[in-house]
Image (tube, rainbow, N blue to C red; front, side, top):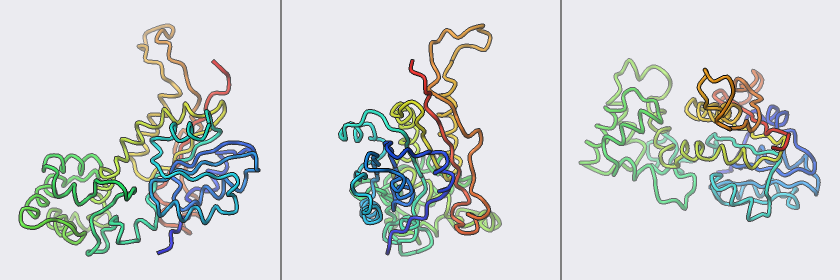
Length: 316
């Protein structure tokens, strides 16, 4: 299967990232290189693009796509949580822009062997973005406690029937290991009342999302990385983040707000005494959504939202 990457909100990212021909940029979630191609095409030989991805299939596809810009592009197999170390290895202290596109690629979703899909009953329960990693969705459903399964389904999937699904998983695995999407789909189907299964799309969507997030530590990595990425920006540099569900968006929104207004003094204080200084400003008070034209072209863009933070320009 070919690794396709249709970049979501490409026009909006181009507008906000404001690529300088001689600037340094990081794509922390390279994917198939759709956004990176747009960035690299605006760079001269004095500019640089560092592309990071933990999926070797993505890196291989992006390498082919970005071959015309090999003189200004460096690809790195890693997680964007290690961006500071990656840049240090490249001799880079600060960058002019960073992009995160947190969506799961169509290749990952549509390739049953990668184990992300609930639409193929025979698909394995894998869900690793980094296939060198040891933790799979199969390990989670077969070894984690019922209490922990309930927690991740409720927190990461916002699944109202989390406890019933977790109990069903534990019951099934006592009889046989849960190793295929079809087995998990059956548990979910039995746990959710019929009238509720008919609402809000496929009944397995929220459970599979929760397992994927847990397997790849997605929310923890995002939460722990945003401040570091803002610190890596040069004055006037911008951090652009595309999210695809409310859990990610809330983390980005709060991190950007706190970076802009870090003061923790009580509202009653006449002046700030905590000494915390703003790192810059939020450029998107609301998440930027896809246009109607883009929604018609790419239905998977419907849940996407872009938020942008700009590093302060004056030196402290």
